[in-house]
Each structure stands twice: as structure tokens, then as C-alpha cells.
Image (cartoon, rainbow, N blue to C red; front, side):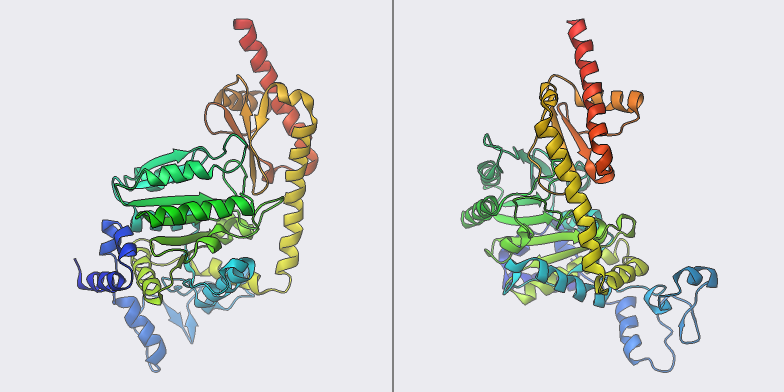
Length: 437
């Protein structure tokens, strides 16, 4: 093992042996090399005459650029667009995002968390965490309703097993007991990666405050039983909370609860600020130890440096400028109201349209972009194709019974027609099935 990695590991072991044990073999080998970027950073501060270090081209006192590109970005300083951003992200953006996080998550007050590390959006953040903490035969614990990309990131890429539990219990509430059983089954392995995605994709569900308290109690109980737990929160749809649910990230409740629990928050501007193509995300670690936070940041920087080197600078600048704008909160609130109206309209249609109950029920939803129908006696993939081919309506089949509807991309005035078409297509398939029997 390279000496810099060993030194980081020794520091981690001295501070929290459990976090060291959570690392994958790759995670243990990671470090941030003191190479070109470190030397360039030093030169940026001290090289007052000539700075011949980093691989960019300059003209005059700034970076070289094409006028035809700068013309479309004239309100931005070339230094904030064309130069490389630091591996860990633009410092001003990291500071602003942390301040935003603390404001939006009151339970973080007084807790010890690191500075957010910039990623190339949320999938990149998940991939980093998978590389750092998941080995072959480690287990990722997910509800049975989960985003399919988790399988690629943790199972296909890293070889981790996936263990699922039912998202909802018989009372249609979050199944905390199912989560508890799934974690305790990892006792012999001594380690579990628990991924919590709220608002949930595909169901659009976020737990209530009481349900979150149950989740936190379960994770703490399992840690006290001797299991090291990497508790990852995928907060892609954060703040889109429309009804009775917790209004902050569960990361805020999990941070610093036990030495055997490493809480990791993965979030980003992608959905929160409606900038999907910007690809700006963040990883934030929680630990009572500043040394642990430092080691984890160095290892995270190492894997970023060894893959993409750094995330794009222009989009980091765009997001930072938006966050700092006095219009930011008002504009976000306007979009929130639109999304909430769409969600409420869908729920109203589903509850008050009696005929729909002939062909489907629906899973609880109170947040996010989506809701999920549970079809009666109709295959979801068959219905998806029928809707697409006959009606030009796109939906997502999750499994044999579940059809995901993204109300986020349908105008409120069009939602009634959308569900009428889904119902009509479902009835046609039901009638065909009845004729064949």
C-alpha cells in the first residue's frame, strides 16, 4: 500500500477503528496525491512572477478563451468559468451549500459535519461511496421500491449484494421492522450499507417525523449490537415535501448518533434547483472527529482525482450565483407551488375517481416527482407498451405490478386526461384478458 494511504488509514484507526473497517479495499488504498495539483495550488499563492505549473493556457492576467463562447457568458468572470475547479470543488460553493444545508436542516445544529465535496451530480456521488465502502460480499440494504441505477452502481460495478425489505408495512407506513431485520442479518459480516432515498424514487414517499425516529432508533440499535453501518441518504428530491412528512433530510437525524454509524449525505442542485444538465452534486460526511472528516475528504479527493480529476467549473459558478441571488428563495418557492399542485391534483383524481379502483390502487406518496400505481391483474410492462404504442403516453414499469408516473413533467391541467388514458388502456387490456379466459 502507498505510504500516503497508510498514513491516512493509521490516522483513521486512531480516531475511529469502526470507520476504517467500513472502507472497501479500494477505500483503504485511496489517498490524494501531492502532485501537480498540490504544487499548482502552492504556486497560485506564491508564484508572483511566473506560474508555469498547471495545464491551462493564459493571456494577459487571465485564462485564454474564445470570444464566441465568452459572448454568451459575458456576465461571468473568465476566472470563474475556464480554469480548473479544485478537485474537492469551488470553495465558495462548498461554503454556500453548507450554509444552505444547515439552514434547511435544523437538526444539524450543534453536530459535526464536513464541508460538502463537489461531485459530478448525484450518481457520481453514489459511485464514489460505492467505491470507497462496497466490496464483493458486502451488502447494500434497500427497500423493495428502489431506483434501478443502485444495482449498477453497487452490485454490477462493485459486486455488493443487494438485500431488500418491504418499503411499506400492512398499515401502509414505513416498514421500520423490515429495515431492522435486514440490517441484523448482516451481523456475521459485521457491516451493512443502508441507503435511504427520500423522497423515494419511484413511490414519491417521505416518512413522517415519527417514522424517521423509528428508522434512526433501528440504525442505532443495530450499531449497538456491533454492526458497522454506512448510512447513505440519497436526497435527490430534497425539499419537495408536500404533505405530512419530515421536512429535513434524515441525514440530520443520523449524524453523530454512534461511532459505528457513518452518516453520508448525497445531494445536489440537479433536482433541488431544477438544473438537471448542470451535473452539480455533493457528498457530506458526518463524524464527531474532525480528523475522521479530514481523512474521508482526502480519500474522496483521491478517487475524484483518479477518475474525473474535478467537476466542471462553469456549472459550479452558475449554481453559486443562483444560491447567492436575493431572488433565489422566491423563485424556488414558485416552482415548489407548481409541483405541489400537481401532486395534490393526482391524489385528488386517484381518491375521488371510483372507476380507477377497478384497475389499480396506489402506494402512499407525499413528495418528490413521482407516484406509483399498483395494477390489478395487468402486467405493468404490457400496459406501458400499450400506452406508448396506442396513445403516445410514456410511463415507467418498475416490476410486474408497479407503474411509475412522473407528474413532475405533466401540466396540472393535463393530469386528468393522462390518468383517463392510463385507465382506458388498462381497461382495454383487462377486457382482452377476460376474452381469452
